[in-house]
Length: 209
Length: 138
Image 1: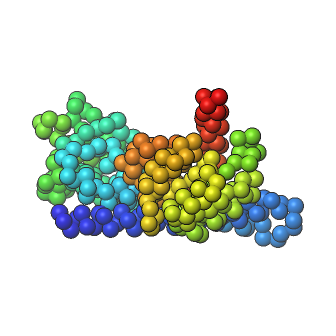
Image 2: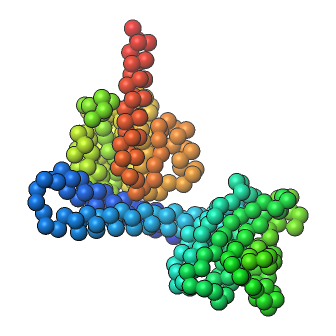
Image 3: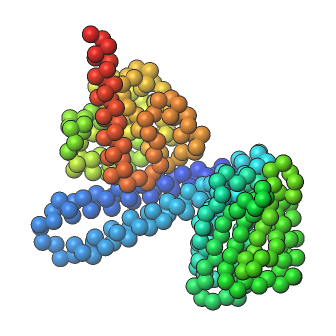
């Protein structure tokens, strides 16, 4: 745990510094945009290309900001492990953000479609995030159509927190589910196949599974 | 430019020189005349010369931290409105800064128009509080 906290602290510091880097990039691009607007009547052959490039910078700074916020949340998860409960909705949102690239490599997209407010799970943040990630990875590893969408949500089902990963025609084999159950050992999550979805059932508040 | 921003005494405090000088230039293009400090000690020295109405303050800086600067500013110039702008903030930092009297708390990078709105609101609060303080002193 000491190593995990070290990793979390150092990663969080680096992520925070990256926010400063993005802020400088954003302000510099913003200043160029300001100057172009002020001089809008001055002929400049490459104005359109420059404006387009600045649009890209702004768009990708926002994208980077989202990734960094999720990374920072992940890094701080090592602090949260002092506590024995966490919010499943936040964990799902962070994991969806951080698996954007993995999904793209599998020609898929992960969409966090929302979660019940303050959906408390009786487990640490890190194990819960790990469980959601392992579930997502299993679904991403299944054969499927290009550009398929995986909808990740967190639900309160009769008092029991459930992370749901839905994609059309998902069929997991018993071996897949058994393998996932083994991988999830220690996270508190239990996997089950639902029509077109993998569900991870977490211990409900009060410790009753 | 809105009335609240005309002649506003604005102080930007951030140890990221590339960020704070570029931000100052962009605010100048919008008619503001911010002063810049690169650390907390410099900020307090500039505030002693001329207390700012609004301060935009970074949280983590070498030397005095943003929270220490915030506490000092609120102790000596209670009318100064402080906007925290940080790349380092946690929810606990945010709560602590708001409890110490910060009027707003933003994370970098931030859309300039959002910051402008925040400065405008802070300037309005400063004017109102200065007006009340003046009326109470009569």
